[in-house]
Image 1 (spheres, rainbow, N blue to C red):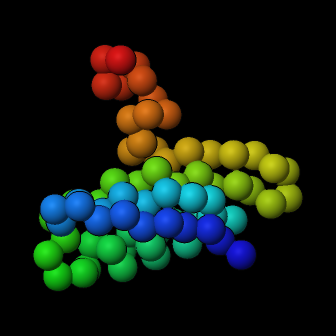
Image 2 (cartoon, rainbow, N blue to C red; image 1 turned 90 degrees about the vertical axis):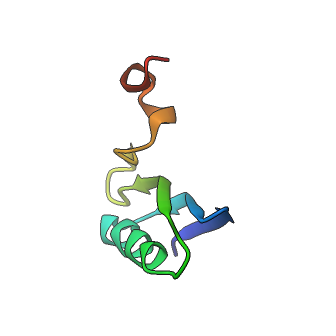
Length: 71
């Protein structure tokens, strides 16, 4: 079971939680992007690969990539 929380403020959707299939991440983004009034989607989802336990953060999550944002 995937665990996703959704927070919306001023048209910005933030997705947080854990998914066990990267296709679920994509589906959640597509659904959020297609809601009327949404201006952007920020993906903080973490993909947990169930066979190996490998954890992969969202590619566009600046909190996971501080050098990319100058932090």
